[in-house]
Image (cartoon, rainbow, N blue to C red; front, side, top):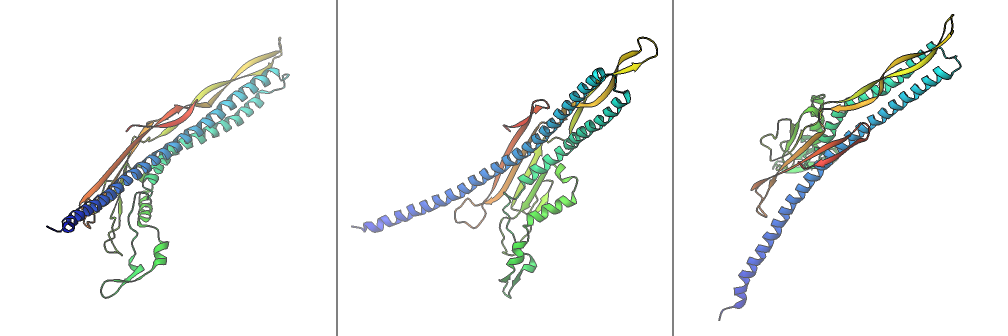
Length: 331
């Protein structure tokens, strides 16, 4: 009769191996699912934050629109009252001077709205890129610079300058700053920005640093984060509404009836903002992230590449009279 314990032992080893492999596989799959959630959260937040700021700019111009309209109505009423019921003491030149001063105030308000409109497309693009590429999805290791470490005769690290290492910004931040300086007035107008990098610091103190590109992922890198925008507006304009101000003035003549009340007219080019014109009210952001990924648990070799993508789309709604908001749409 054989040893029953000896017959059960191989089976228990097999069960243990299967359980360990299953647990490890679950861990790797969970890591991929977590990365997908992070990608979606950052992509959504980038577009939501940008759309919120964009609508805030529209609604600020709506406030100016209301002020222009109220000023127009107020001055129109004052002109009518002063001209018709001021016991004939209101001179024509006083009306003209008052109108010119009011005219300048109206123009300055409209100019403020137009300046805000001119900055909105640029601010929208910068907001999307800075949030999407803000570093939350870039897990590039912060490596030591050559002057921050020393190796011994066997190539092993014998000294590290942690003080300088900790005070220095991560490589990605430096690359993005340099990219902005080199492309000062054009970087935010690019429809695609990609940061390519290596996730693992194989040599512990030195590796090929990441690079940013406007033409897609760069070769010889194992990971990248790609942000691509489409449909972003190129301009926003506040269209002004022309109106006419009516007033009355007294004219004395030497013959009967001797006193006349005559109408006068002044143009008002900035009575209110008729509409806000833009070439696009629907725009989208696509985030792609590639990471090295191990399918086989406990393997030190990269056996696959994990490529994730998340695309979202937003629509701006409203008008100058009712206000503006946004809604996320199905991509």
